[in-house]
Image (cartoon, rainbow, N blue to C red; front, side, top):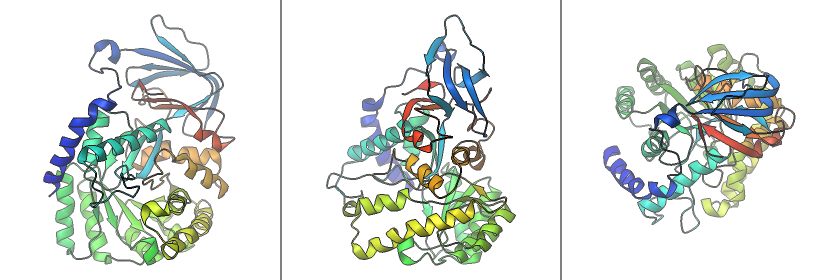
Length: 410
């Protein structure tokens, strides 16, 4: 099934890539060896340090050095960012780039009637909006279209962030533990970067645990054996406990967790990716596009204060690893930074929010050695914003410069 769907998606992208092909030819030795010198009044390194009057040298795809004294290199291109703040490209650990609003003004589905090409253009538009918002790496947790999107952005055929994908989501309660292990092996063979698993129902259904402890442990154990991380949709306390004790890598949402589960995650080194506001508010603001009525909107509206209170407790839990993920869906792409603002309002320091979306995010996705830090030897994923976000997190919405892998997009 995956192969037939992927063939359709691939054909659609083949017909529309030219519309987005704005990147320079990376095969040219002149481009590969190109040197760019960037100056900014303030630099945040992604680990919590702040430097004033910083100069960054980018050679090809990597950061060559960072200095506090002026740098002049013959033949190098110089970019003057003035009073802007330079920081590492941002990482969103939970995104759905395949979700968009179709020609009927509804969230895309099998009934949309959009052609494959129209769908491909919309999805590429989501990636462009996300990149322009300063997010240079995203983790997509479920869509067969991700394989072609991942390839297209990696080859710079369309402008977008680096993509890690689970390809699909494991949610059926029917497979046996052995069958679930086989599904994990199949996704590994399909080049999935991670495994996405549902251990609970959705928010509207109350978030109760849906898979057995044995099923959850089977998926997470097999994934770990194959070197794959596992992200688990878990809303209720029981579903979170089962995922943590089952050896899963990361918990998504955790809306109703208690202090007991927060401490359990910290004890087991389980990464936590809660959502505070963006995904819920996006549904509320665009109820018509999602077909929500007053009844189905009620739990979404109630989730914002509940999630905010939960997050306030989470950031006070010693040793708990918290990363940044928005669960951005249709009409939220490019608005990712709004979640950062909500986290600060909930009590997290602006610098800690930035770290969660840079170095901590890179560590969570297994790329701490080359992403998420603005330092020598790291990938040249750089973003600049108008203002100092460590003092005023709303500056994260004012992106003025974007570079991914040494290629400037904004």
